[in-house]
Length: 240
Image 1 (cartoon, rainbow, N blue to C red):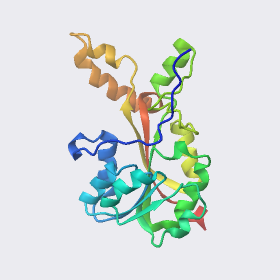
Image 2 (image 1 turned 90 degrees about the vertical axis):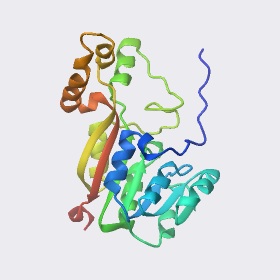
Image 3 (image 1 turned 90 degrees about the horizontal axis):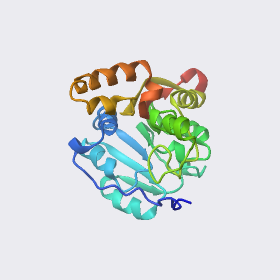
Image 4 (image 1 turned 180 degrees about the horizontal axis):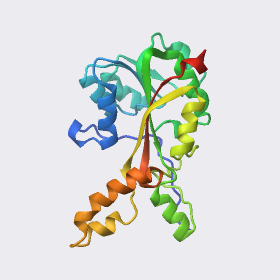
């Protein structure tokens, strides 16, 4: 029997310079823009909060872990220590926000549909949400299921043991639309393209690896990305 995986209580990542951020985090910063009022759900110790602050954003954070929230406080105008699934949390927010961030948060919730619905009440008229989710249908997960016949939780990653909900590109799309949003942009990151690694290790074929990756990601995004990205606004017709 393999050693039991213990769920980490805190995702404590060191603060790094902008150039060392992952591609998906750089994309979120670019889309969030500068000088915005931002609500960051699940900020941890403030790794991303710091970069929003550097862009001149005014940030409110909601974080369930008290010690993590204290570390993030130096970059945030307001810190709320609470479980985002506490229905009273939304009444503690005194303003509306231009941007609401759910960066690898919704998969940890019992009812992400309700939380997304509640978030609409604090989203400004021209505001938008940015959602990042792990993709349970990516190649690495499928490969292990097909060839090894197993689904094993991990300490981190797509199969993080603390994940309560699992989404692929299509079920994530449904989640966001069912909550009353219009998806303006979506994509995948964290390449898991089949055979790309093998091509990179072959002297005469490694030049084809990036071409192969681009073709596969464009044609089969649900297979070839470990992470999902969405930008969405409120569907006024549904909301009314």
